View 1 (cartoon, rainbow, N blue to C red):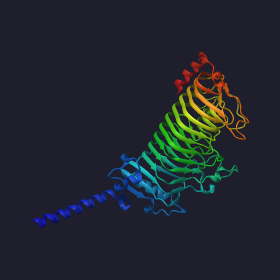
View 2: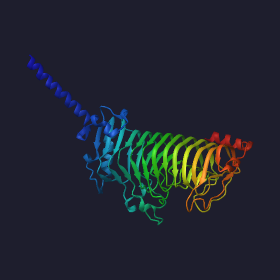
View 3: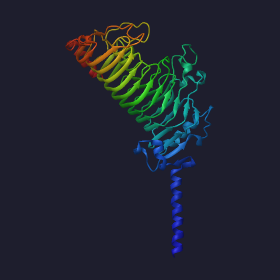
View 4: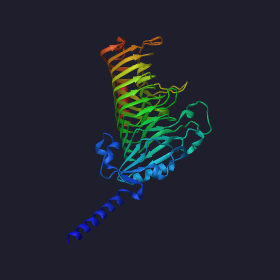
Length: 447
């Protein structure tokens, strides 16, 4: 009797093991790795579960020789991870995969992790891109609950796109490296993104975004290579990251709200910017933006808001706080006459700007400490300059072309320790008149 019971127990044990393996390893392409979960998720212990399953792109036939197109293999691996409650798409270390433009589409069954420890390479030759795929390289669409992480690199190999020579393949469109469209609850952390043909990391019509400890790199002379670009996106936290490109380190466009940016090292580039907003008389609405505890060095601009003439809308409740600047040409900027070409037509009307705080902006500038060029039709109101300490840069060129600060059609208060001392006379007192408040209220309704 005991021998029979023991034999029955062994059979049951084997049956249970078979069922478990069959469930966790679909088609033999995944493997349970709960014991090594921290290796993949680092300090984020809450993302580890007993049912996490990993799908290695090499298991789906990827060559990883930098020549063969592994795009279809990436998509096939994504589809399997997307069908799994806790799927992990693994790009292993010491491997480089050539990936042509792809869309990784959701929604998925559960949480998906894209673990990048190797390198993803974009086609370096412009002729390798079809005209239908010039908007983005790796596109995430309708994806909810996704984490992208790892010690690897996403390399846009964009140097051929930066040359001013026109190509019949390029027209005026250049691809973004990573784009998220209509996605929610996205985490991007630890990876390096570099040398995108244009924008490196874009979030469009999304919400619930967190970017942590990423490195974004492109040469200072690479045009329009913004680091992180937000558009129609809300509930965002960007933190503890190093960004140096040929354009804005962070660009915040229309439709963005509840954005918290902190502990960013920015430079080279064009600083941290809202805009340009309102181009071609379009509607633009941005609110509740906080940028704090960051360093901006060797950039053209520091903390900036830029809008086009003729636009409609409202920028409100924006704070730049505790920003250390070093050798920045224009550390504090509001420009309601933004123009990115040699000549722009003068237009009446402007996007209203109110409730903007610049506080504890400290460091050195090379051209002009403050540049507030606001519209005579719709002046900037409720502007607060407090504890601003900006001195000319030292060195053979520092301070040689220093300009006096500009404060045009700007209303608010200047308080605290102010260097240069002329800042205390920068802002007009009052609210800019009843017509300004009326315009602001009407734009509030539009937004």
